Image (tube, rainbow, N blue to C red; front, side):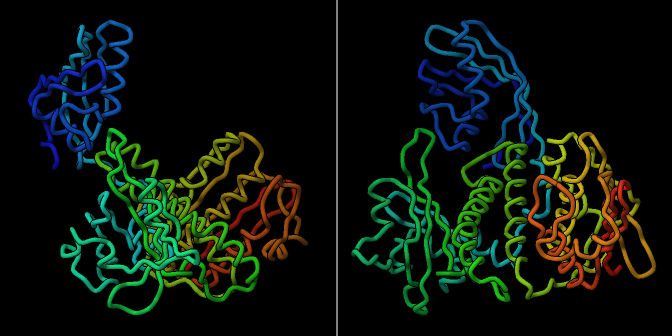
Length: 445
């Protein structure tokens, strides 16, 4: 339930010596419930709880501006905490609600056509402590051939037949007994095809730490291990096992945070999770691009907007070297034909390369241009430059030029292949001691 945009103040509450919210006016009690707790249970709002503990520990009244959240809004609060013998009295003197900010990066938005994202976050469900369904994603319900609402309340085993391990054990039941994480519980859809699926699940707890069920992700057996057109199968096989499943779980967990799946969350914290999801999805797209097969699906994109997202992904790398990322301003969208995730990958590769080769406290510039029939994004650095005889081979796989401390030699090769698959290209202008200018060229709309 969402709180109203504003609340009449003051709003009062009382926290006992054990940190439980034992008295509260209606808006504060409602916020406590939305955070997964209740009256008489531990105060579930970390900011308020921390203020109450500080006031009790110091033995003096404290006042502080805080930011909290309900299900749909960020809340700007001004709270006074006054210690008493039996606890702390909280008085909220300002309660202003504003819409929760959207994710900063569009890369964390739902992508129905992204098979890795679908496998990581599309087939999901949650159960109570008795393995009865309390939530199910529409994509999983469709897979099961059932109505999502009709699945709620049914035992998990009515939808899936759990497959025993070679020793006769069932990982899900073992995890239920120990309240532990479930990995690779094999299952078959009841009444469906004999295809096997894999269930990975994390235990859920309430605000008091009590086990209340599982949140699970379902994927087809081996789905994350299948990428057509790979030219290095042995490398890809080990990469699949080492990276893809862990990355899928990280993305799923980050998405769960972004969607506030465990209750209200401040937008800035949700945005941290959205950035993690975007970065990990980018890494998955890099893995998928290791092979030579496949091509990007063209769509209308704003090249300037995608460049800004790419800059956001490499900003920590630039900050570590105190390198300024100077982005050109543009009056209108730079519309081009291309595939958004492939474009971001190309630009992240080029930007990362520029940052690695730039001097500390240098500048990497991002410049936009329109030409007849094409759009351009140029990344210019202040590095040592590239000799003419090296400028062609730098796009070869595993080619490295100079003495940069890291880099696999794959980024530019992948970037050029992706650019050409979208009907574009990457050009290079450079000379020793004059830096380098890499330009992504794509057909304009």
